[in-house]
Length: 220
Image 1 (cartoon, rainbow, N blue to C red):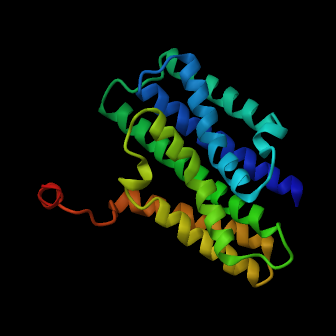
Image 2: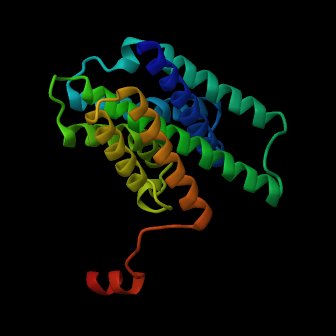
C-alpha cells in the first residue's frame, strides 16, 4: 500500500509541477522562478497539511524526492518551451490552456485523496471533518500559493468548480473508506474530482458571483 501511495503522490507532484511551471512561463518568470513555482505548487499543499496535522518536519522536507521531482519537471517544461514549443497562435494558446487545465485537475484529484488518506491514518477512529478538511487543504493549497505568488486572483475563488470538486471528492473518499475499502476509496474519490473538474471546464460551470455594481454600491 505504501508503494502504491508513493506512486500516486509522484504522479500528483509531476502534474502540479507542470501546472506551476506553465503559470510561471505565462507570467514571464525566468528559469529560477519557473522551478520555484513548480516546486511550490507541487509541495505547498502537502506542507500546509503536515503542519496542520502536527507532522514535523513535513514530508517534503524529510524526503527530497518530491522537491527533486517537481524541480526536474519544471526544468523540462522550461526547456521544452524555450526551444520552440510555445503557443504562438490561437490553437497553440488553446492547447496551452488545455494542458494547464488537465494537469491542474489531475494534481487536485490526487492530492485531495492523499490528504484524506494522511488524516485517516492518524488514529483508530478517524475524524470525518478532519479527513475532508485535510484533503481539500492538500488539494488546493499548492495552487493557492502558486496564484498568490504571481499576484493573481486564486483560481479556487474565480474559475469553474474547483474547491467544490475537491470537497465532493473528499467526502466520497471518506464515506467509501468508512465502508471499509481504503484502496478503492482513493481511486473513486480522485475520479469524482477529475470528472467534476473536466465537466465544469467543458460546460463552463461556475458558482454565482455578486454583480460588480451591487458590490461597489455596498462599499459606498
